[in-house]
Each structure stands twice: as structure tokens, then as C-alpha cells.
Amino acid sequence: MANFLLIHGAWQGKWVWPAVAAELTMRGHEVHSIDLPGSGADDTPLERVSLAMYAEAIARAVKAIGKRVTLVGHSMGGIAVTAAAEQVADQLARIIYLCAFVPGDGDSLASLSELMPPGQLPPVQTQADAVSAQTHPASRVDTFMQDAPYAVASWAAPQFRAQALAPMITPVALTGERYSQLSKSYIVCTRDRAIDPVLQRVMAARSGCVRIKELESGHSPFLSHPTETAEMLHRLVTEA
Image 1 (tube, rainbow, N blue to C red):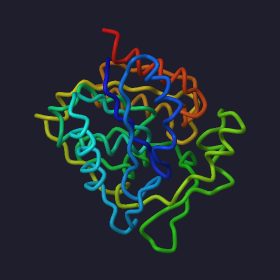
Image 2: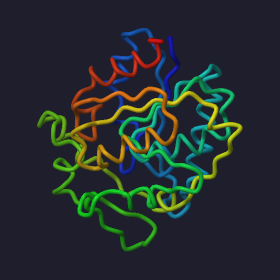
Image 3: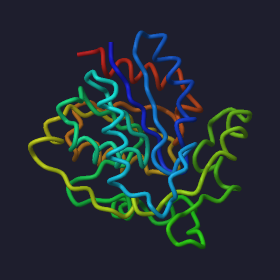
């Protein structure tokens, strides 16, 4: 069975993963997750947070597991896991992108976001510190988890934190010898309101994802459809 390392997206933390982790564990997998610097319970000052810091944190976690890892990146986490893969490609079994941004060489989350149709970018507001951004509380449920149970969405919405901007605007540098040699798969969330599903399909295809699955879910399938999400992850690592 696989050794999963689950990486969350912007504004969130590893608190999004317990339901999916439990389902994967029941299927016989080993499951790990971390808070990226400045996210979740991690108290790194946001002015210090960088994409390189994200990559280093993921690389440390991969090395600590000590086995070949299946790296899963959600949303902005796709940028982070791609950057980390350059450092630890030889210790990865595969990467799975879950309704995530997938950069090519020189891409950033900001540049990929420009490919979305006008008016489809999530409503966010740059903070007074000019180094971070936050989602609008009134729009979190409708944008990120419109299909989650009411109680789950009500629990999750207040946990969104300010997000450092630097990892969003920093281009990713990739080589042909490491990242491109990894097996990659993608799960498109067809009801996603945060990342256009058409853009998800485009990023998956151009990045060389050998398997592309579709899940009828909004942007937070770990909250709205944890069993289905875990089953899809399970099949991606066990089926030929």
C-alpha cells in the first residue's frame, strides 16, 4: 500500500484532511499531513513565508517518512508539491493533484490564475500588511465548499487564515531530469467554483498526467465527499 503525504491549499491547513486520512487508513495506507509554513497551526510570520520554504517543509516531511511517498497537493498545494518534487524526486512514488494548480517551468499560481475566465477568480482581499491576502468570510462557503454539509462548512469557514502572497507569485523552476520523470495523476472537481474545471483539465493534460479522473465535487472534496475522494486516491495508487 501507499505512503501518502497530503498537502493543503491556500488559507487552510492540515485540519482539512482527517476524514480522508481515516478513509485511506481503513484501506491499508499510511497517511501523513503537514501545515505549510504560516498556515494552520504553524506560526511562521507571513512576511517570511516563501515558496522555497514550502518546498523545504515538504521535502523534510518526505525524508522523515523514510519510504517512497505519494504526494497529494490540493489547490495551491499543487504549486508547493511541484516545487518540492524537484528536491526529492527520487523519494517519490508519484504526485496526485487534487483540483490543484499545476505549474510548468516558469509558471506561478498568479500566472495560471490569469487563464481563468473573467469573473471566476475567488474574491480575496490583500491585507494591510501587503504580504498576505484573506478570503471574504461571507463568500467562503459558496466559493470553496458549497456542496459540503452545513455543519461541516460552518465548522471549516472560521478556520481560514490569511495567506502569504509570496508563494502565489513566485515562478516554479523545473528540470527535465527530475520532476518530468515522475508519474503524475489529476483529480478534476467538476463543480469547482475556485479553479475552473476546464483549466484543471488543461493543466492536467499539459503537465503529462497519465491518469485524469473526475469527481462531482466543489473545491473542497475532503469536506464534501471524503469517502469518494479517498476511494479515488486509493484507486490511483492500486490500479494499473
